[in-house]
Image (cartoon, rainbow, N blue to C red; front, top):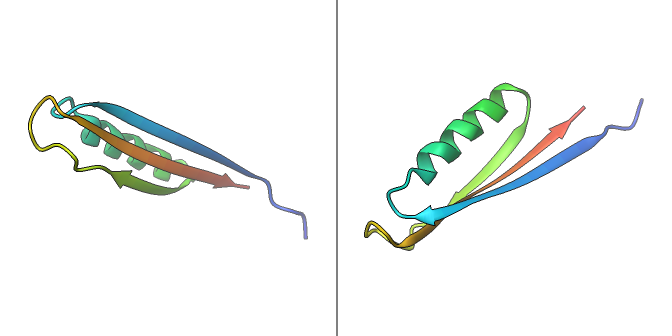
Length: 64
């Protein structure tokens, strides 16, 4: 059996609340899942007021 190779990728999207970080993160997650990555995501809910700082964090791994 051949040893497996794995590549991992960490992405953090941050900005003001209301700028679409959740939408961008979900689209990126769906795209990478369809291309064979395993994924885990974390969304902050620190600010519910438009203009406060929020972030969307993603971790992906590709094993082949």
